[in-house]
Length: 237
Image 1: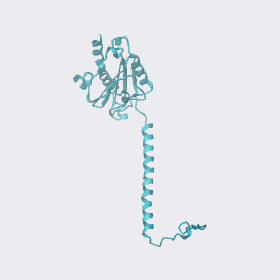
Image 2: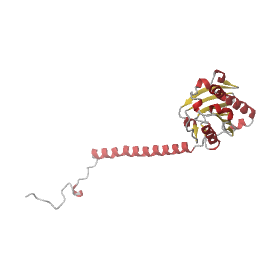
Image 3: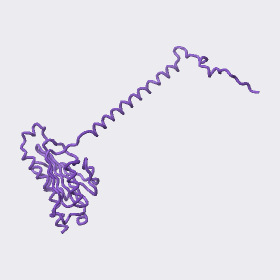
Image 4: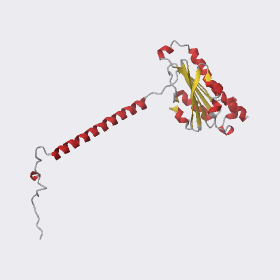
């Protein structure tokens, strides 16, 4: 018969476990090994806190809007292109931003860009049914600005986007200029929406002394890029 023991074995009795002798190298190894772990944990906590603060700052940052904004709904003039069914061919960058449009007054073309997801060109608003948004940025002298044209499904969708730009959100600013004192205009033209936005590149204090007429002139020049829609009307008739 096997014997059983009711008392603790030497390995189970804490009192029987010998203390490591002074200067035990294994004890030093265990001590050193714990320090890097504590440093790693502390570093992870710091990084997580920094990401959290950074994310809060990014999400909480207010997006810029123009100081002066004018918006127009579509009209009977654009009946021929009130729906994309009558104007199915997509816009091209070359069609909208022609050779003549590379210089607008004192401003010159900086870059062009096409979005297949129109919401990427917007903040605080959406453009359901939009298939493309074409954008150009300009700069020259003390002015900079941008022009965007959205290709939506019909005039109702175009009017809805213009209405949203009045209060819900706006186009994303893709070139540096002062939003303070800036001017913008949005037009619904059949199933298209154009947005022109211009501002001064000087400081806000310097802009106070700059003639407002310079901003108006630059805005009119940018808005003129929307003439591409007239060609679409002729083609659809």
